[in-house]
Image (cartoon, rainbow, N blue to C red; front, side, top):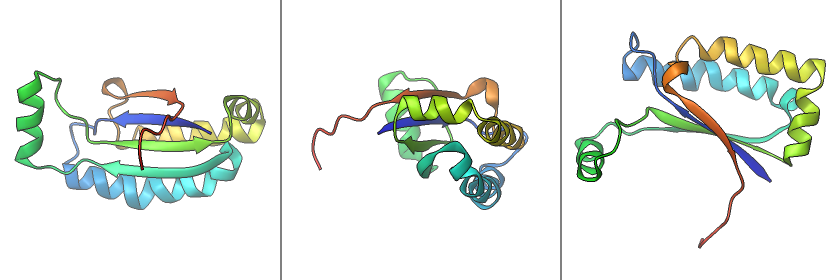
Length: 122
């Protein structure tokens, strides 16, 4: 399995609550409906918990400001993702997600990458 990890910042015109509500209640169901066209095996949203502890942890390490959350999308293999994105349905689904993400994500301040998990302990 491989995993696409999308680290997201909310648009500055949205409150944290508006961002989380849109992501969970509107974008989530859209991803669910398009999952088969994308070859997605699993989709998880992790919403950042807004607590003073974040600022303390980030500040103690001299890190960049924190993100609003991450999305993880699991797929069978890199080859399977490439094959799906080569189809008309896969391209259409990927385009729909991109259009919807612009409604709540600051695309320029977010990033994504593909990972391979290595479990250290469970």
